[in-house]
Length: 116
Image (cartoon, rainbow, N blue to C red; front, side, top):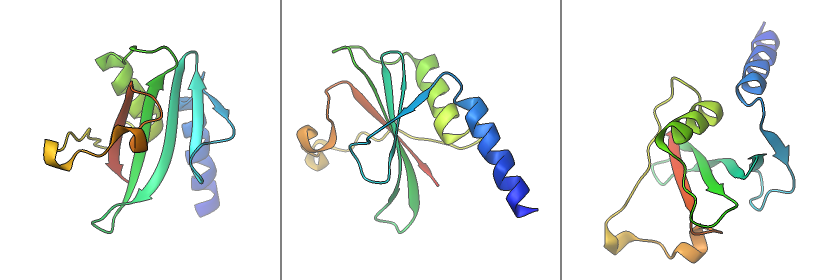
């Protein structure tokens, strides 16, 4: 029974990600790299400082200075994090900013987080 549910979830995820192609290698060990046209999504699960596993989706476009529209952002969130899962984009105080060179490979990268 559990195996059937797992297969069903895999099929649902495959249907949600229709049109997206999983590419290799991922620049982050254990992460999945997906591409559709000029859009690139990096999907990973990371242990947060609170002790919870967090889904992390990085969204970028191969063209410099191209950002997702709100509908595109929601669509990617639903495809890679699920329709019913709440996700957030965090903008910390300036005193807690991380050097973007260590976080983003490109300048036009958006990050979404959700509890795994």
